[in-house]
Amino acid sequence: MTDSSELAISKLRASLSERLNELEMKVIFQDDLLNTLNDIVTRQDKEIMKLWDANRLLKQSMHENKTGEKYEAMETPPPHY
Image (cartoon, rainbow, N blue to C red; front, top):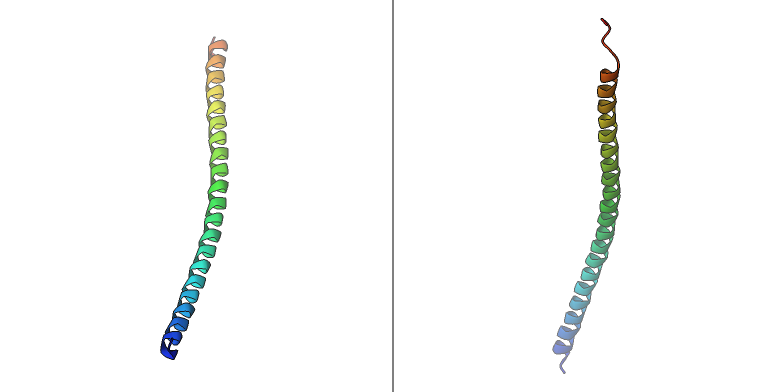
């Protein structure tokens, strides 16, 4: 091999090594981002479930209050009797 071909191979190896390092760094950052996003989605899912439960309880409470008011209205006579 000539010196120029060895130099070209050396430059190619350095270039490939640099590109490989860049790709590895990108994968590391993407993996970190994916984990962060997964944590956020998990937390939001829990918050949404809590809100659904609170909404269900509120609707149930409102329904019970309406039912109780109708029952009381039927039981108590108007004040003019």
